[in-house]
Image (tube, rainbow, N blue to C red):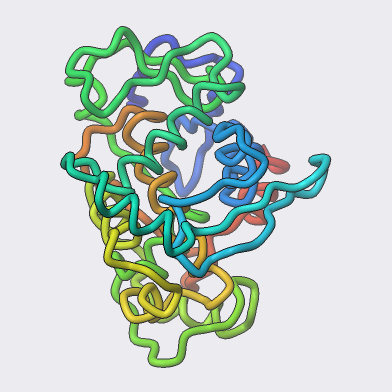
Length: 284
């Protein structure tokens, strides 16, 4: 039997698929604006200043972020020595850099991502409603219904889980680029499926955003499997992953999510990627 979707899931996003004599009700909707690179640009736009400084980056990090199809670019850098010293003196509350970055992610989700929605905030016990993915999936705050659901994730969630060490891999030589052959090899050394939770992403985000991390070298020692060109974004990316799962989708912090990089197809393990999803969508 097909389990009914959480109401009011848009009917146009539901597809009935029959595989191996079993019928599945599949939620399928494209969200190109939520990719990890696009999210970086959205978060920097939400920060307002022409140069995003500070909490989301190590002290020696600097660079520009742009995305195909978007005009201009956004610059970022870590705090300089005097700014860093001032921040260490002023940071007397229990909020760390991870929370600050999570706030930016939440602001990006609220500004433009959810034009008619107010995403739940981590400290809210009874949000009025939880919105997800540009308002295409809106769920009332029925925590019991959300907790009872099964969740699956792939794409950049899996990549960031590998880079941050949430998913263990047997790989001693980290790649230099997320698109290099060694990165593919690394993902193949990871389990095909792995159980994680929004809380797991929140924990590694706290490590990446730790005030004691003053350089990308510090990040390298904490996340040896992360490619060198991804290290400056570890705090930002992991904070976004945690925020999107918890405040975007409204998934409970300790709820298990099945994260997968590969699926079994005709007796062979194949990479789960957007071309595969596009092919399935085309066949449907």
